[in-house]
Length: 237
Ligand code: MLT
Image (cartoon, rainbow, N blue to C red; front, top):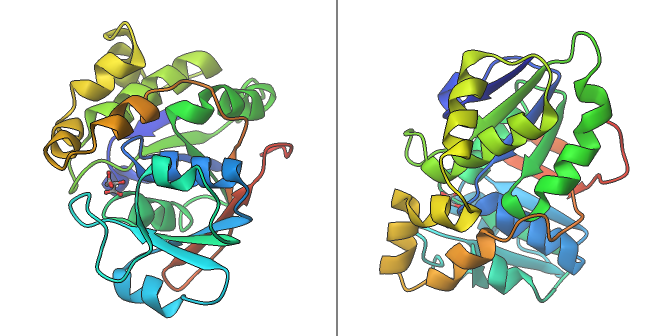
């Protein structure tokens, strides 16, 4: 069955969790791995991220969309196009905690965004038609409230995978059908408004690009407030 956690509060045990934070944490992580970073270390706090500082590591993150003091860059996929080190340490308000929480509920955790939608569908499609298939799509939301852009992508992903689905997946699919283009869904969201106010309009258009990156980020390890994510494109869930 496929169902959708509209926020991380709805996480349940599943075989595979696919975590979404379209604006912008999963988009930034996907872009960073596509740029050649070996891994992205999601940290549950700025303090944790600062403690991870080491040669070859770039600190990235945001508070209210803006780069925290002392960090190397913000949580922008545009800033992750150019690789500046071996590992990106990423501390964000909603996406990072959602990914870390998902590792407590599912043995396999993948990250999705519009940029890698096709690659995620490809990675899951064989498996999605097997009996006892159990997938939860997890929307990071914003401050414990569902975020339109995450529910939109959850619905697009659910519809593309097919198979048995629960009502939360049907709700998300209805949102997915409601917009002609990804860009329309993203620009309609409250999170896009925050980015516009912060002067980051270009990030919205970038995160709305669909299936441009052949990268499936996958959690490799999780411990004490840090989840390490690397490419898992060629692996079955
Ligand atoms: C988050 O994790 O809360 C988001 O990715 C916020 C942002 O757009 O930077």
